[in-house]
Image 1 (cartoon, helix red, strand yellow):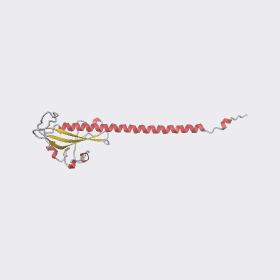
Image 2 (cartoon, one colour):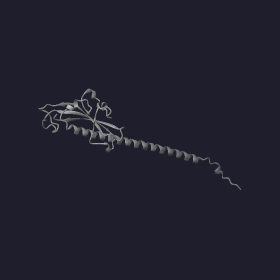
Image 3 (spheres, one colour):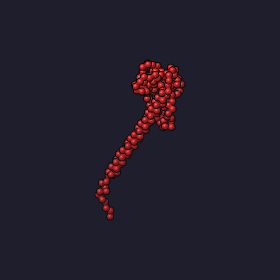
Image 4 (cartoon, rainbow, N blue to C red):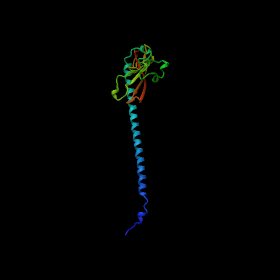
Length: 186
């Protein structure tokens, strides 16, 4: 004797269809979340790389200030710039683009910073150029920058524009910083 259950004949596979839809939705959610995580990881890496490039450019500025503290005369700034020392000529107005930072053209030179190297997590050691902008003051009465105006100094004050270029852990992230530095007694 064969018994038929009336409920078995009415099943159409609805549970299978619903579970497949739920599985599809979970898969889409998982793939989207993995993409977001990957994007956030790349963003954090780029931010870290830019921070390293910024710190390298800061180190180049410090190196340039140490160099400028030893300058006794502005005579070296009247040359062609092959040694990274430029005057304030109009042709050097956009110095970041004028200088050949890769070192292919020796007439558009730079100075490599000596206080930081590639062992610090950067791709290329930082570089900088120094432009002599102007000198001001008289030999007799000049505010002494070293004493913050407490006396007179022995010469003119020279203003120098320093442009530094730093890279991060790859040469794709580049940061330019620029400052003006005054040297008294010139």
